[in-house]
Length: 158
Image (cartoon, rainbow, N blue to C red; front, side):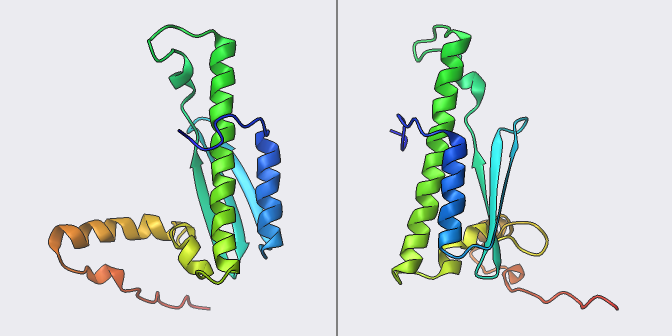
């Protein structure tokens, strides 16, 4: 069962709670955006001199048009269930972020360890987007790819 499946907390309130939580733990920048055509929301913040980005994939609206037995749902019923699933995803993101920040605060882990996959690199990709293909190569070849070693880029000319 998904987290917060029966939540009534509106998405904008959860988003505001995410922002206030991040600020309470030292984030000095916060932004978010949505892309309805791709069914996602993006939450970005800066803390500990790092930019962190979470991409929240939202449920496909058409997945709620039918009951589990295949019967058609009304448009209103389908919309209500989809909105509920979206609220649940946002609450899960809040829980994830809070848990990471609490682990850091309690000294269980470090900021970069908790948020490593979501740290935005200078080329705009997250560490996870950059590293996942490298990990796949390592497992496939049973060798460490040399691309895992960070190479400094040349300094731009003034």
